[in-house]
Image 1 (cartoon, helix red, strand yellow):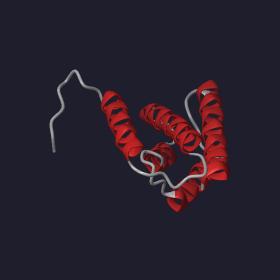
Image 2: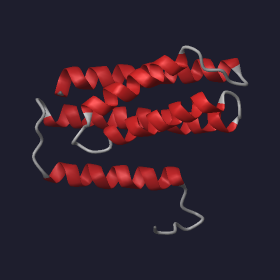
Image 3: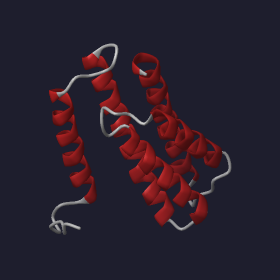
Image 4: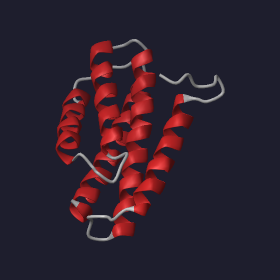
Amino acid sequence: MVKLSSRITKAGYRTFAASAMFAIGLMGTFGCKDEKECEKARLETHRAFQTLSQVATERKLAGVDLAKWTSVENKAELLESAFATRQVTWNSADKARDDVQSNLESIKTDNDVSLEIFKRTAAEAFQLQGALADKCR
């Protein structure tokens, strides 16, 4: 495994990787109804799940309901990777979305406001996923 400089953060690396994948993706053909709109929507969905993944990690580190937050974090990372390339893995994304939604019904945290913000962020990401599926699947 390549050791990253201490100045390069995990989020910075993810942003770089997403940008590189986007550039590579623009070089090939696109199997979507409207190439530009689908790519824009996919990137927006990817960024939403990237944010959701980061927030899930923060909530997990609070140490409350650790098992559920770990599961949500893992599924959010899976969702993030499902939309990282133009080759969207729809079936795994749908399953991960369902798993996150079921966990959100009973998950606990140390801060109710943070939980509500997380739930809204998740709902927005799921809405973007649905819109992308309608437009480009």
